[in-house]
Length: 204
Image 1: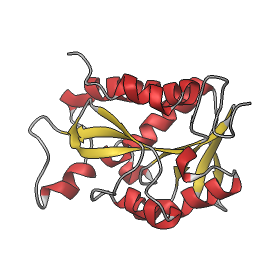
Image 2: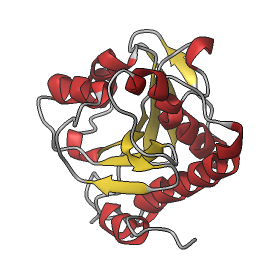
Image 3: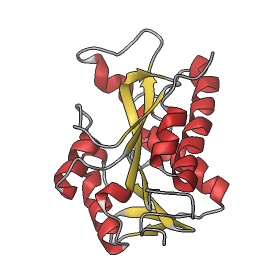
């Protein structure tokens, strides 16, 4: 019999709650920090799932066969509150919660699955760890660093809250598609399988 974490007969340890991190509102739309929202929008489009605002949880929620998508409408540093509430309601444990978010230590175009780990300076992940009481939840990091590398010092905030450059748009669309592929692979075939496929650097 399949475990409660499974969404298909082959999806061992597949996530039941998929979370994309970002900041709400037009001011932050299409910024680097919101790439988690962009990926979830693409996943919802492919699944034919529609987001509905759930004010009790301060989030946008969409149902798919076997699970739920969540875009918290709190600001990034309070994301954990929405994730904890939705996960508790739908009985999705931290280990069954896959979080998609931006990583400034990875170049644009790179993806990296991890099964657990520290916040590494990311306010959204810090909030999730505090609210869930654990760092044992899988995550898909999506690189947002520019070609000239990780910004330093005061440039960091402007970088993550800035929009992608015109010359980055093609690579951005490619990585959104690839990140959606990665999440759907985790749903269909399990997290370990997806990690093996998508943690490799894409061929140029």
